[in-house]
Length: 436
Ligand code: CMC
Image 1 (cartoon, rainbow, N blue to C red):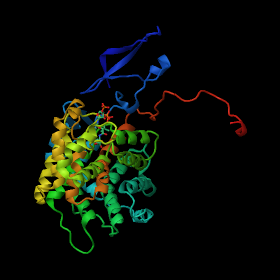
Image 2 (cartoon, rainbow, N blue to C red; image 1 turned 60 degrees about the horizontal axis):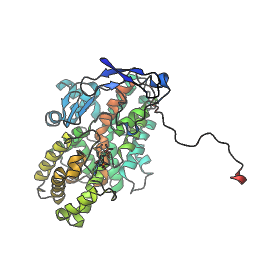
Image 3 (cartoon, rainbow, N blue to C red; image 1 turned 180 degrees about the horizontal axis):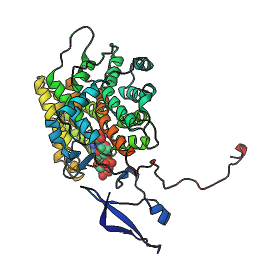
Image 4 (cartoon, rainbow, N blue to C red; image 1 turned 90 degrees about the horizontal axis):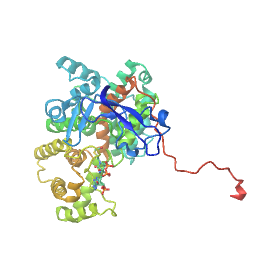
């Protein structure tokens, strides 16, 4: 970390001595005030629920400029990665810091491909779930269960274990998501086919059956690959911070990533793609585009509890660049499938138009986020709505594991242990039950 020329001075109105705090500079983005010694110096904590102003770590992986609407993986703009690179290259970039050359790409792809199968015993574990279980409930269990199957990659102090766990997780997530899907519809699992691409293989495991040949559509394969790239990492979001916090205790990578899956499930985070499509379907049932105005009034009414899902972001105060790319992909996929008149896409465009002109959204800087259009694309590909967040988890696994391994390699890393402002009862004595 680079020490800035200036320092921060914290003073108190009650006459307590002021304290100087070091300031560090990032390569880009805001500086940070280092408050690690604040408690020792003053006996005080800082208070920042929701981490509105707190950097929880240093990281060299992903950078977001929320005002500009810019997203960079290892310095490369997401637009360039999404159009010039595929997901395997993106995974290599996130994990190792550089885009691969052709030989490195071939080696990395081969390595991932060699790990796509899961232990046969996993299917018996899967059988314990109800057939109508939500895929994210299944995924939380399956990913955590990997730690019971791959004992030779659970020691986080061993760099080789960390490396192989990363490859296994990236390789096996599509297999697990497809297994979760096949299980819920009662179809046989399809084993991975290693002559297919990462995205093509996922389509095969999802939609092939043992009864007939399945031909992967290059358009859908490319669209899915782009969805994976757009979701691959997003710096210290809730699930990534969960993975880091969970991993900071020294737990194994599979357990830490399972925690990330659980966090991603929530509708304020990755679950927004499912919630957004459900919202669009509900509006469609109510009367479609004609009902958009009425729906927006509900969104703006704070007492209604209704939110425009797929809109707003803690960091972006401008258009989420992933949403722009996702909208493009959406158009391409719908055109390819002859679904240009898809009513949900029309509805989404109408909602977006109104929101971008409405003072409620403009004044709060609320723009579409990645989840606004991703559900429409996934649905067009044939992925069922409850599986959307599992697809997000599949893609984000690359970012989670890169961030986890970065944390473990950081000499400044410690177990994550926030403090609190206590507002409960002071010390008191237990009374005998008869007198309470
Ligand atoms: N619809 C209506 N109002 C909204 C929305 C929305 N989608 N998002 C934020 N607001 C309002 C919010 O009520 C608040 O208004 P006020 O200042 O009057 O109290 C203001 O905008 C600021 O919002 P906030 O809740 O303080 O912002 P936050 O940074 O705590 O929350 C968020 C960010 C993403 C959780 C929130 O915008 C949201 O719930 N959006 C809908 C869910 C969603 O699409 N999530 C996906 C996020 S991107 C992908 C991912 O992370 O997985």
